[in-house]
Length: 357
Ligand code: ATP
Image 1 (cartoon, protein in one colour):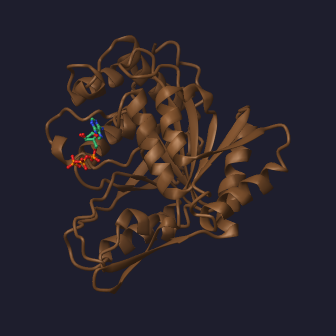
Image 2: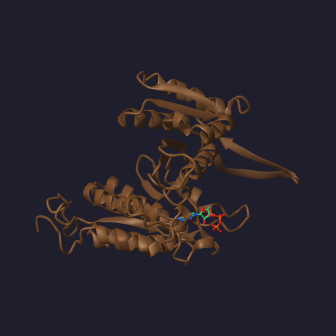
């Protein structure tokens, strides 16, 4: 393997040429998974320096959150674990949602692709979810009008619905996909989901080579469980997006596999696909490291370190798929560190193989 990678063109690490990325470890299993990412990156010489910001959800005020946002604005990219929202107090917003809104990360991309050999209800699933990532049901505009009467606003704008739909169609075109399915509940939420659907139909006119279908969210859940292979790219409002993401992850092997990407016009954040905290399994050396390793691979691809991304992907594929070194959530009996050690064994060591030096 070392020989195979000998002629690779790695981006050259040079003084001032390293990328700085914000790291938000979050709670639960986040910090331990970040440690693995750092070990793997440093082992294969990925020229990334992390600016680590811990957000403690139990502290008063939002100083940590503001530091995190400033850091991401400065660095452009972040890798992130889930930050727990511990309080029901209305004045305490979800830090995760606040970060996405503040940075206008309007789209979440989740490529739900089965891994061969992973015990799952369905094999060979290959669906891309393009989810509205700001506003919609996550506008965080709830209030108790009078005691016992709560109102919650779902915000849908032409501009937001249109740019999410355009992302979905553009993604489909650029990746050789054939069909986009817009998911909605426009029969009941006639104005908000109606607008989401209307914008998708409008954008579709610019992509005549692609098929566009629409499906009501409840039927979508049933169709996914019985025949997920009918879906290609899905265009989803915010809340339905997270529900569908979790349904598909459940169908193909659980929360411990996929990464998700959050994009806006200026910033990008990479994180585990289903955004779990995993508090109950933290510190036990049993969490599946793959969602964060895959987030790291997405990050490397985004920054242009394609070869680093590819060799880490190949090493984790050999570990999990070919050699069956797997954590319990995907039917194995290995520890998290067994998985990481195997990935490291497959990686060319930066000290040994460093082309063109
Ligand atoms: P808690 O966060 O307290 O563990 P929860 O019910 O909120 O509880 P989530 O964090 O949402 O759980 O995770 C959902 C499920 O997925 C849990 O059973 C969790 O253990 C599992 N899970 C999440 N991430 C991973 C992972 N990386 N490896 C293995 N299992 C995971």
